[in-house]
Image (cartoon, rainbow, N blue to C red):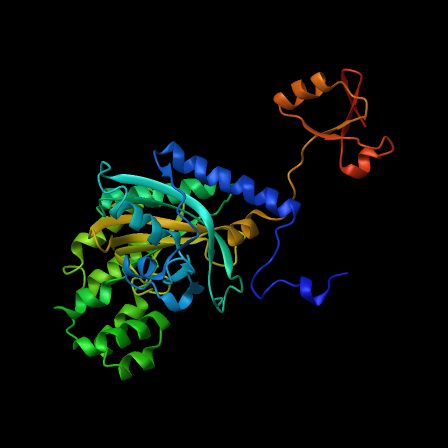
Length: 369
């Protein structure tokens, strides 16, 4: 019976054996896919000074972080809410002299002070990869391809990539569709909300056609070009088209040029990842700038909860060998070395099947139950 004192805080939960095993398998597959393409794993600390976490990238708000006072320094500490920021700090400081482009990957827990309306979890396992030193078309293509390969390695199918142009409004407001600086944020917000009426009220009537420019990637690019935005956005639309060519047959590709949710610090390109079986977003990525070093970079983050949802809850089937109390320990060690999972009897009256065993060690032989 669970007492009230044993309840977990809102938004936190235990991962029981089957789920924990599924998390380990998926994380291992994702990290192995990143390692295979030359991405070295780093492990930044769970806690840092609040100021350090907030200053490296645009759109990172300390208000989303769980903060407390460090008894040693009396400065404000924060639990990380996004590991990308920490990788940026490492690249700008302790890895500043490392050859570029610098390829790093990571996996670890992040925490939020308040859950998102669409996702009640306040603790998440974040995995990702960052290519630091370039935000070129080639670098962006590598990041998108790696994201798809990592998801496929974990077992996902029906992968979709939805591209966006995070700085679209700023770019158009500077010349093609002029806007006063004090209206840019409101226009950006209404476009993101897909609210035509709100967009007109915000002074962005000229931006209304952008609401209808989303769709399959080639069609969306053609619509943008037809709106007269193609010339201003020529280089980035060409880059998006080239990235898409390399992904044909591997993922469904769409473009929503005004999507901003989740792209607080990305620059010319952003992308959202989906797959069959997952109701929500599997992850996001894009190009950005690391403040302090002002280095360009591109990367992506994946989250474990929607990934597991897409994979389903079927446990991994494994043969398990029961070892009687008086078993041959040398034989058991040899069997574990070739991949057997063993459970040893301690009392002499255990029921192997009740413990989940499929085989039993009889003398030096493995016998099915």
